Length: 226
Image (cartoon, rainbow, N blue to C red; front, side, top):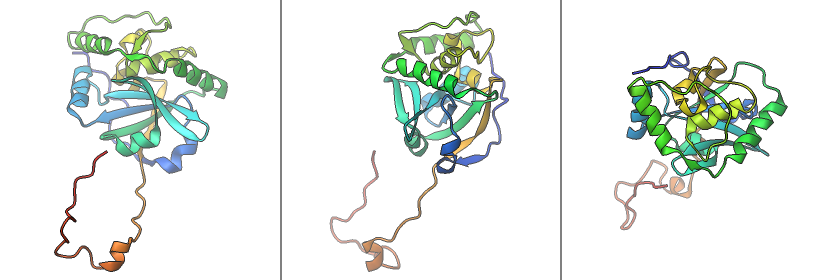
């Protein structure tokens, strides 16, 4: 099996999302390390610490992530990802200075891909090639595809401004691990959502020492759902 280098894996600081919002730029990359069985399988197949990748975009005062997931190429608020993702969301940025106009060009290219279908079979075939150490496509010509998977989407967006995240590997054969260890990217930290302090409710005022020993009928707590 081909294992990617773990250059960008290991001890990494936590970064407060709210305090870092102003520093996160168009074209920055978010790498995901999920705890689900599916994420663990992806990491095992690719020999990487990461299972998913997405691209940052600023939409007015909102920070969004554009990503290719099971339901297709979509855009999601980063705050929602950081708060609800079962795993780690890590922030990467370019090691080189990218002018603002080129960063905007990346966003515009990525936006044109929104709504395309997820390329499940290409992701599967990539995993098979990695497991059996089959040769991958080395030509890195930029081309528009009808279907995309996560790391392909990120890689081709960088390719759109002439920045190849991994020489000698076509965008269609880039894994999340290849994105993470690219010499063109550096990891800043794990994005964390600061928990707001709990405010006193009327219930706290009635029971200042906590919940009463016996609850009234119909007051049984239920699991939270989303």
